[in-house]
Length: 162
Image (cartoon, rainbow, N blue to C red):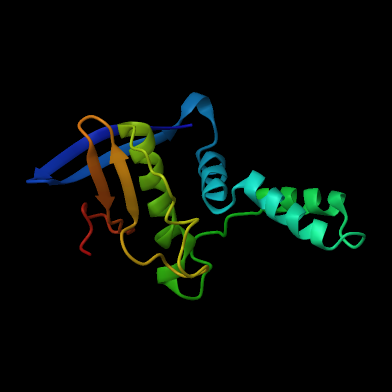
């Protein structure tokens, strides 16, 4: 689990900018924990298995249940690409989706926000950046719509000039 410690918060009317330090709990490997979370955002294991089994039943005698289980396991252990490896920097996982994944995780864990549908998993066009807001969620008390736009940057300025 990732723990988020608030460092600074700037409020401007209904808008806020918050800086968190984040760390893995109990000496866990931060990269491994984040990679697992990103995989979960992309793949819902039971849904993937159900979809593949449904497809298999339509191809009776052709598909092998062991092969489906192997495909699910291979998908779940797929590596998250190394930062800086995408030919288009704005689509690089570290710049594009890692910031969104961290924001999702921070709102859920630090604020208890309910995020009913991940923008990463439920994209209009797979393999492309999400269009629209990066985070849509609900806070319970008081009932509040949480709408987030995420910008990731390696700039030292905080917030970055975007």
